[in-house]
Each structure stands twice: as structure tokens, then as C-alpha cells.
Image (cartoon, rainbow, N blue to C red):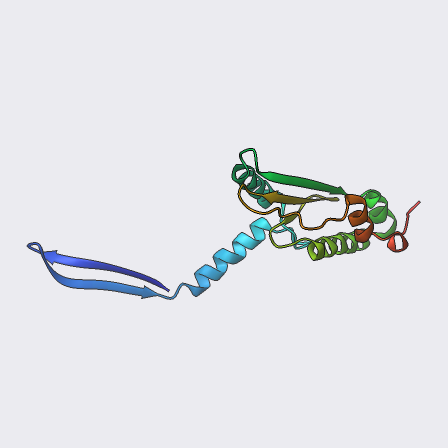
Length: 158
């Protein structure tokens, strides 16, 4: 709802109030949909490069100082091109959606998971000064990687 008003004065005395009440539900929904499309990778549902760059810049500014902690995890899907070439783009798209789903499952809302290239996903972790660490998973990176792609679930393409 948008409310606007104006007071009409004559000789310094208020004589009328004009107002307008507008239902802006459709306008707001269109704005939110446009923003979603501008910031989201439509295949995976992850943030896209544009949102990633904006959030990384704000995270960098928030963590300025000696006690700010942050990390950036780049995940490159090795062997992705042969999946597309051998099994087709539908299989490659399914692979990307699965990777996105698994990363979204293990990442908290405070973290940003974004698809920045065809077969590259990035996870930004940060801890602005004065807050507790946002990196809550104590498992080493190798264990986390094994969880994301268990050996028995990986099919190698020759």
C-alpha cells in the first residue's frame, strides 16, 4: 500500500488535505520477480555472478580490520565437459542441479553459494568483525569434498 498526501494552504492556513491510497501489490511483485531474475542462475537456483560480486564487495567492507575472518571456496567441476559431450546437455544440467542442491544443503543461510561460470561454483564464508565465526563445520576440506561427491556416487567418463 502506498499512501501520499498533500496539504493545501491559503494565506498560511491549512484548508484541505488531499490524499491518495494505491495498492502496489502487483508493482511490488513485479519488482521482486525482476530482482530475482537479475540475481539468480535459473538452472541451479543459486546466486549468479552479479549477486556474488556485490555480496563479496559488501563482505570485504564488513570484514575490514584485523579481526575479520573470511574464506572463499572455489569448486570447479572436473570432467564436466565430457559429461555434456557424452551424455548430453540434459545430463550436464542435472549434474549442475545436483551439485547446487548438495551445496545448498550443507551451507547455512549466512553463506552465499553462487554459480559464477558454467562448471564453477563458489561459496563465500565470512565473519564480520565482532561476530562469531560463520564457518561452523569443523570437518577438513577433504572430508567435506568427499561428502559432496562420495566415491561410490561418482561415475568417471573416459
